[in-house]
Structure formats: structure tokens, C-alpha cells
Length: 349
Ligand code: AOF
Ligand code: ZN
Image 1: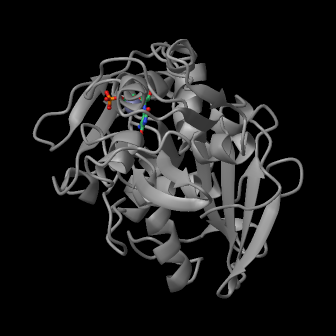
Image 2: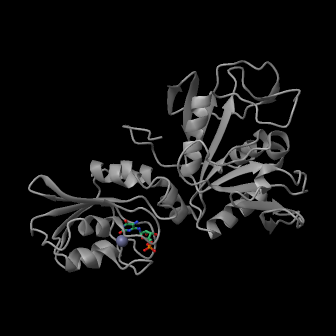
Image 3: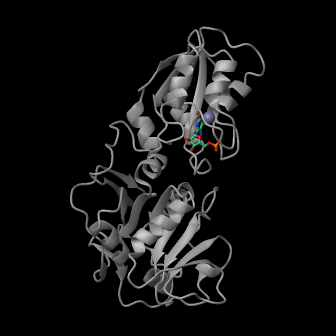
């Protein structure tokens, strides 16, 4: 199962909106075949695994390990439970059930009805952590929310006065690469208008290989300049505005004066099957998410250079669950209490 999770993780920046799934076929203590789910529309992990052993017969005492319940529905691909039965897999070990309502329990029921032995609950905590975005989306009907900011050791996120419209560096260059990996692993990235006005960020994942997230900007009163990089058309942008804006390269969602912008962002993203959003600021937007309890995870980068004055960094109560050194920076991981427990073993970047 540990190997399944490793394989599953290969889909970290491509499997969404589907979950990350790995499968391993084992016979007499030896691995016969492996597979993982790369992206929606491609083979599910079980199919990829069985596909890699060609048409040869599956020994009757072989065991299929897979970190998610095999599916029972006809989605973009036919049901994996049927495939396992047809290929003669007699024993299946899973980490947990699929929270997707069309599958939930039905895959296991179908296997059992066909006489297949099923063992559930192996490395369930680790597997749920790996697929926390997908699970949150299925269970809560909103994307998994990750807050991220960089602060100076003296607690500022932004120095004043500002000399120019550009991102101010607090974290090191090597941490910036890591942040781009984070961006590639989430389907959307959200900022407030002031961040765009001040920093003119690109909000892409250019320092790493992998896809760039959907850029989402809340700008109720159309304050951000037309020439901002979020309108460069290089990646899709969703603009939440109070009034439609002409001549900008972005999809627009019109938000009324009485509407809560956070709820609207989350529902717009959920409608688009976006399972996770990385909130990159600024302080005001972070504060709103924190005040409403609407966050699952926070990643706080503390740089090495003091700033002295400026915008204060948001505050989270409680201690970081994990922290680690990254070059000259320190990164803290916070988990909202309402979220599931973090497995003791690892925090996978
Ligand atoms: C599995 N194995 O490797 C994955 C599963 O429309 P589809 O065909 O892409 O199906 C997507 C759904 O299938 C997804 O929402 C989740 O419930 C399940 N994913 N199931 O048996 C896999 N990726
Ligand atoms: Zn499947």
C-alpha cells in the first residue's frame, strides 16, 4: 500500500479533478505489475496496472492493492470493479472507500458479490491525507483551501513605503521554486485586488514543470490596471467583479453588493470541479478566510531578513504542526482543527 501511495503521488499535478490513485498487483510476495492514474479520461490505476501485465492470466492467489475503492460507475472510463472481476483478481486490499457518491461502497459491494475478498482500511490515514483535496470536495462541497504567505522574522508581509509595482522578495529563490511546485499541485490560485495592484504577480508555475493553476482575482470595484499580468492570456483567469469589465482577457463572474465574495469564489470553483485553491494573499483576504474558519491548511514561510515596518502578517492561533528549514527560510504547516488529523509519519511537499 505504501508503494500504491508512492505511485499515486506521480499524479500530483495531473490527476485532478480526479483523486490520486496507485495500484500494485502482488503474487507470492513479488510485484507483478504496477499502475497509477495520470489524468481524467486516462486509465484508472487498476486498469493501468492490469494493462501493464498484458493479457496474461492473473494467478488466482494474486492480491491487488489500491489506495482507493475500485469504482463501480461508468464515468469517462468503465467500472474498475468489473474489470477486476473479469480479469480474475480474487483478493483486493484498499485504503478507504471512495467518497464520491456514485461509488461510495458500491465498488466493494460488487467485488464481494462476485466472491472477491476485500480488506479495507490499510494505511487509511496516509491515503486520506494524500487525497484530502478530493475528499474535502466530495464531503464538504467546496475546494480544499490552502493559505500561503511569506513573512519576515519580525512579522511583516510587505514593506512600506513601496518603491515600485513588483513582488517584494521575502522568501529565498529556492523557496520560490518550491512555491511554484505547490502552485502546480493546486487547481486554482486566489488573490485579492490589492495584491494585483501592488505586486502585479503572474501567478503561474514557471519555475517548475507542470501545469499552472486557474488564476482567480477578486476585484469588486475594478481597481486593478488593465495591463496587469493576470490579464496576459498566458493562463486562464477568473475575475470576480461587481461590474462587467470590457477589454480584459478573463472569464468574469459578476458578484452583487450583498454577496459574500468568499462563498461565491468557492461555489464558482466547485462548479468547475476545482478541488483545491491556494490563497496567496494579501493579508486582508487571508484574514477573511481565517476569521470565517474557511481554511484547511496554512503554509507560512518565514524569511531571514527583517523588514521593520509594513503590513502585518496574518496570525493563526496554535502552533505549527510541522516546521522545516528550507534554505535560509523556515516553513510552518498549520492544519485547521476541523480538518482531519495529519498522519504522524510524513508531510509530503
Ligand atoms: C478508481 N481508480 O484510479 C480512480 C478512481 O470519470 P472517470 O472515469 O474519470 O472517473 C472519475 C471518478 O472515479 C472519480 O471521481 C473517483 O470517484 C474515481 N476515481 N477510481 O477505481 C482510479 N482515479
Ligand atoms: Zn475506476
